[in-house]
Image (tube, rainbow, N blue to C red):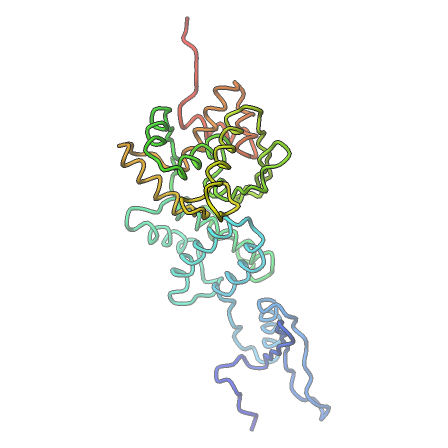
Length: 346
């Protein structure tokens, strides 16, 4: 009688051993002619090890192969691919993969069990409340990336189930903050929000990047920026007697009032750094006081790009300031906000 397995339900002839932080897998061929047990190395990649196990087990016993589970592939993708993405993208992927796992792991499913119809079902499930259409599109895109990763690693040979499945139409945000609205909110804002508004508008950067700017980033006559979403590096020139130079001096003057303060350019009334969520609350409070609706702090970036295009007469200047990879992206970003500027017939 053979030895009873220690772990009930364990995969037959599939062995694993931890060496340091890595786990290695082996196929147990058993004993042959009294020469002792013979094991074949299957490597340290679980997905490939399972596939090789299936080949060897099929040759010996024609046993059904264990399945590579979708959740496990998600873990591999997040560890090997997503972990190398920009901070903002990684944070988005972490939220997106949770939704994917909530659906495709109820109950747990093998990656090869996912069909195109399941992708359509996911989109329907995700938007059943009449909202989250954009998020559903992003999550579908991540599922497609995960599947391509699985094909590249040899975890599946099936075609991508997202192919041919249409997402939801996206119209994009088309809000432009008029000068009068900006001034009204600015006058109702506290000093912290005023500094943040002016810095966001003059640099044209995203809220998270504005709040991440520190005193060390102001050097050599420029404000140095590394965009959190794309990793792109920019230098915003500080012109002598320009508005940005005046703003930076105002920020320095305000921070001198604190015995101890953060090195971030934007600080609270206590001298501490401010989060994106905290700035959003300040913005909402100022908008309510100014009786201005329908605009968000992030719309300042689009206002900066639009105004830059109009003042410079060259959309490429706005492209450079915003850090867009192409003029087409900037055109879509700017034109949707205020419309294309044209001249009359005569």
